[in-house]
Amino acid sequence: MKCNRNIIVGVSLRVFEVIAAITGQGLICARDVMGKTVGYLHSVNRKVIKMEYEEIKNRLAPCGLHCGKCFAFSDGDIVESSRQLKASLGNFDVYAERFVELLDQPVFKKYPAFKEMLDLFSMAGCSGCRKENCKLFKNCKVRSCSEQKGVDFCFQCSDFPCGNTGFDEHLNRRSVAINRQMAQIGIEKYYDEIKDEPRY
Ligand code: SF4
Ligand code: SF4
Image (cartoon, rainbow, N blue to C red; front, side, top):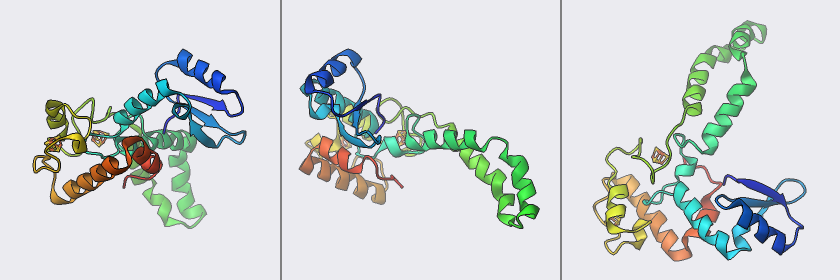
C-alpha cells in the first residue's frame, strides 16, 4: 500500500487525528522507529476509515482483481521498482557487453532484452479499472456493468455470480472466488490480507 504520509508511532491519538484532518486525501502509515509499517491511520480515526475504502477501491477493480499490483498500473510497485532499478543501472549497457568476456558470463548478452522489459515496466500508465478501460482484459464487461448496477464490487450485486463478466473460465473462477472472500470477511480485511501479495 502506498503511503502518502509516514509518521512514527508514539504520538498521541489526538495528534494522529489532527494530521488526518489536515492532510485530507491519502493514506497515512504509522511506522516504528525502524521504518516498519505497524498500522494505518484509518484504524484510529473513523473519518479516515471512509477514505481507506475509497483508496482500496482505486486499487481493487469491481471484479476483485488487484490493479495495484498490475504491471500496467501507474501507481503500482512494479513501475516504481522498475524505475528505481533503471536509474540505479545507469549506463550498464556498456558494462554488460564487457562483462561477457571479462567475467566469462554469456548471460550478460541478454541485457538488452532485460532492459527492454524494464523500459516497458517503467512506462506503465494505467490509472486503474475505475478510471479507464482495462488494457489486459479487453473483453471485460464488469466495469461498465457494475456502474450500471450501482455496485462497487460484483459480490454486492443481486446477480452475482453471473455469466456477464466477459472473462474466460479461469479468470471468471478467480473473480468469483475473490468476491466470495470479500463478501465473507469484508473489503478492508480482504485488502489488508492481499495488499502485499504479488498478483502473478
Ligand atoms: S485496469 Fe487492467 S491494465 Fe489497468 S491496472 Fe487494472 S488490471 Fe492493470
Ligand atoms: S451482473 Fe455480473 S458483472 Fe455485472 S456487477 Fe453483477 S456480478 Fe458483476
